[in-house]
Length: 331
Ligand code: AHG
Ligand code: MN
Ligand code: MN
Image 1 (cartoon, rainbow, N blue to C red):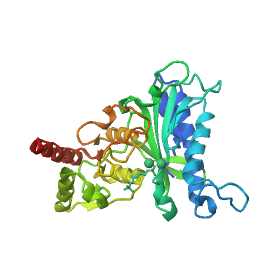
Image 2 (tube, rainbow, N blue to C red):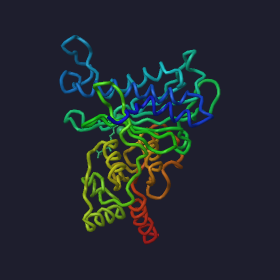
Image 3 (cartoon, helix red, strand yellow):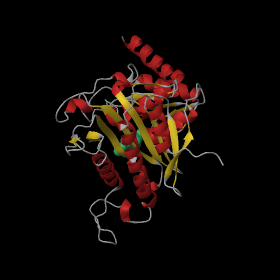
Image 4 (cartoon, protein in one colour):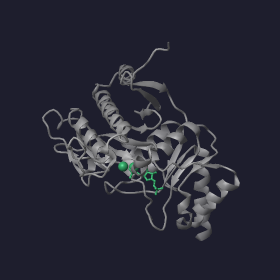
């Protein structure tokens, strides 16, 4: 039997390799792993009880039913509040950031930003969904401030996602490669299954909501036509975590461009695009808004959106060329 390396063991081994590490980030990653296991349990039973129902209804045991994204949000918040290594959180589900002022957290050095449940539209049809997180060192002193949460993506200390699919996987990076762990529910452990994931150099899959084609700019329409002429396969699941996970493993390009309906794009810079860009770059890929590196974009607001094109370098650079040529012609 192969030696099972659990997430906890892997994190501790990585910490030992880094003489300057003090264990706080390791502890925070383990806390996020715990939240992921609990959310996975709730996602997996969602079809069985009223949990999938609308928030506010009462279930058989008289509890107020929480929608999965509300439940996931509360679980992430409570795990991080108890961590002691996180002094503030910002969630896609909450308008404002939440300081964690308890005595054992207020002096912690990290803030965590997350999308507690990504791909919510897929919940009721049992299609894979996920959780996305990003970890930054706080830059302020005293009570956390907005500037701690709207740092540019290059300042990320770690980022990752959990995909609740045919199996539950946690994929993360602390800047030393991308590593994937598959949950073994029989022992309740995330076990190392994909060490040092590298995105394939070549890709033949393009992933976009082609239903938005009429609302795309001419350069994006030209690129989609190019993908079809190249007989690339179109794969679009509709949850970013699943589409990015497939792109990481099989190669290709995932993009959510600006449309006439969403001129800034739909996906959120700090909760979705920065963490996914960190992982894609760590795996040897590229991620831009069509002209600039996503992780260098300036965040002005918590819920800021951006167009995004991510995947293997060659395909991202092709669409960037379409955009560049189009802008030159347009003048
Ligand atoms: P969320 O469920 O967190 O709001 O995210 C949904 C996002 C993302 O997961 C996915 O890539 C995108 O919405 C799909 O949008 P369309 O349905 O417009 O294609
Ligand atoms: Mn999302
Ligand atoms: Mn979400």
